[in-house]
Amino acid sequence: MTTPAPDLTPAVRDRVHALTSEELPAYLYDLTALHGHLAAVRAALPERIELYYAAKANPEPEILAALRPYVDGYEVSSGGELAHVGKTVPGAPLAFGGPGKTPAEIAQALETGVERFHVESVHELHMLADLAARLAPERRIAVLARFNLPVDDGSLDGSSLAMGGRPTPFGLDPDQADEVVALLTDGRYPHLELRGVHAHLASGLEAPEQLAVAESIVSWAAALAERHRVPLSEVTVGGGMAVDYAHPERRFDWAAFGAGLARLADAYPDLTLRIEPGRALTAYCGWYATEVLDVKHSHGEEFAVVRGGTHHLRTPATKGHDQPCTVVPSDAPWPHPWPRSAAEGDRVTVTGQLCTPKDVLARAVPAPGLRAGDRVVFGIAGAYAWNISHHDFLMHPRPGFHFLGAEEADAAGEG
Ligand SMILES: *Cc1c(COP(=O)(O)O)cnc(C)c1O
Image 1 (cartoon, rainbow, N blue to C red):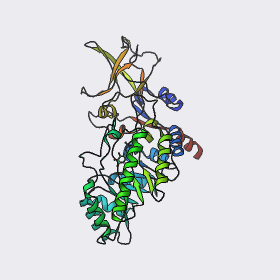
Image 2 (tube, helix red, strand yellow):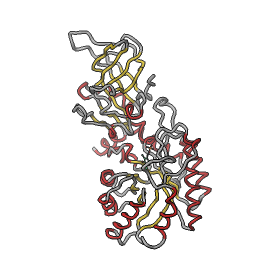
Image 3 (tube, helix red, strand yellow):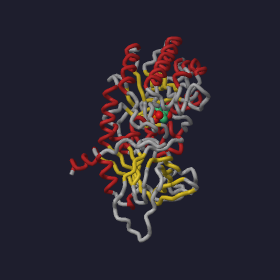
Image 4 (cartoon, protein in one colour):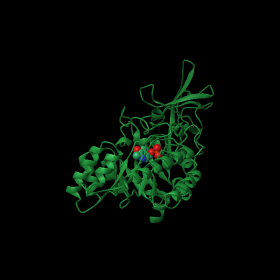
């Protein structure tokens, strides 16, 4: 059964009521809520832990800018993200990751002065060295070698997207560690500096699992440094902090995670430890609001068809969940001479306008009496939502975008 969305914030509730039918669907981002969340996350983390935001979770310019006071930098994974983030938050430190970097993207990163490269293969390392020697001969380029490290199976129970500890195209195999360290330290590539190790092994981890993974990455990196007698001054332990779509009130335990990271940092006082979450930073600030176009009965089930659909909010389709949502009944007079379609039972399946049975946003939504014209607001839509969706499929209009709260206050302050 679909769970209710988190309580609508006052700004979201007001805007849902204010928008006309034709202004729906719309993405609503509560920037005041985002500021509050980020301040709490930052406060839970020891000061010396660096926090990077993985831009792919949600790269809306207003979101990137709102994050700026709380993050030490941004992780970008393509030439497009690199250009976009560089332009939106100029001067912010960037780490450039991702498999399959092209020569043009690496050249772009070198020319724009990216702070560090997360190198994902031996081929990429050679290519980076070659381009750095030609395009940035005056600099020493900081390299974090990304490894697909073995993880203790127990610590990854429940994670939804394992990217490490099993065969994947991400990062270097641990078997290649000695070769990579040799390539970066035997003097043949003087333009590159082996700065440390990067890993991002799974998504959807709770704080204890996340800490276990971080500890194993750090101790593996320390052993590598020891074995080769090379200094490794940075370890990035990735993102993947859990967001629980079935239980919106259960939040990642940043306090416990921060306390654990503090212990880990104390055990390795010379090391800069970095995390790079995406989803858990921005998911809760976003909402997708829409309107019920029609309610219909089909073979014993009831369906509410809403404006928009999974081409705007693909998250439930990709993750295979029901997107938590809240019904906001509309008491506006029904404008038509024919009857208003309405649900007879207690549960409806909420679908979009696409001509495919996959366009399901939420099943078994408790919505007794739901009627055409009522509004449905989906929560936890601030990450991997609009930007992962197949917008052009069926050529429906795009949703509106509203950045509420802090941004409006800023604009008012300027005026
Ligand atoms: C996607 C990604 C992240 C962020 O993951 P979340 O699950 O959004 O926290 C961090 N690092 C890398 C390398 C990634 O690919």
